[in-house]
Length: 101
Image (cartoon, rainbow, N blue to C red; front, side, top):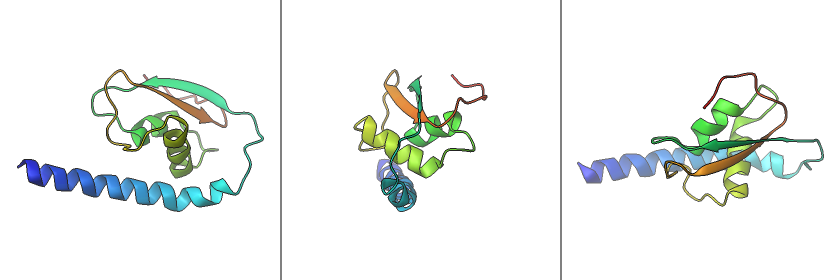
């Protein structure tokens, strides 16, 4: 059972990283001169960088690019391995009107 779980986790991680890196390449070519709003989110059990960014992002944010930038800024190598209580800093283009924890 643990081998199957490991394979599934590895597959998910590859899928997330592929999506993030694929769409973030264009973002590297743009400079971030516009002001950004900083959010600090405390990871809960089961959270990923993707799930945290999805809660905070607005329509003005490119979610895969935001995930990649968040991983880079927070020195996160595995987007699925956040520890409960770990603080993740996310910079977005505008204030989110969504309710989030």
